[in-house]
Image (tube, rainbow, N blue to C red):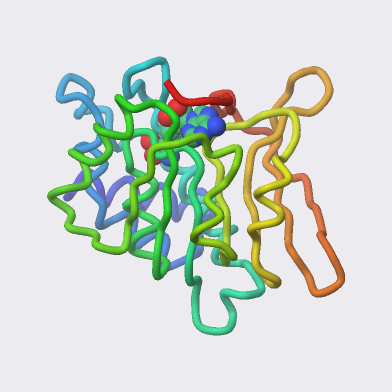
Length: 213
Ligand code: SAH
């Protein structure tokens, strides 16, 4: 917990001002989501391998994306309701989201990681985090509309289903590849008048892939 607090202090020193996000990241034991051999690096600001060629995102990227989600217009009316995460991976970000929003639906296309996330999350007893195995490109219509959608994998366009499943006042945060292959963080707000898009800083996420495996 001391090492985790230091991570939180570093996030704050790097400009993260969103108290609920800092608190959630100070609570979730990130070392439980990586192999024991990597546990001593769990609170450093690096992405780490989680198996099957995938990675757990850096703490400052998780914090940044969660902060952006909480900035959704709809969140101003009493917090975020249902949130969809694409790319469960090891389940770390889903656990952080579970402390920040009412319900989390999280999709993973690799069965091995879906199962790993289930094992990782069990001790946390987060009854509001729903782990789903499937291709996130189609979103998850049963839970729609979502107050927010967050993707941990990036393609060269935003799937139409994600925009369709976003509530009015809701916000989507996702990496997107622009010309030259560089990935940028993209925010899409669904306003009563349509979609509003902002391109933020460069990021590095694993590719969004179609189908299950
Ligand atoms: N949030 C995760 C980050 C995992 S990396 C964490 O905290 O660990 C991104 C994940 O997205 C990978 O596990 C990858 O398999 C998954 N992914 C890629 N394309 C996907 C798709 N179409 N549907 C669902 N998951 C996908």
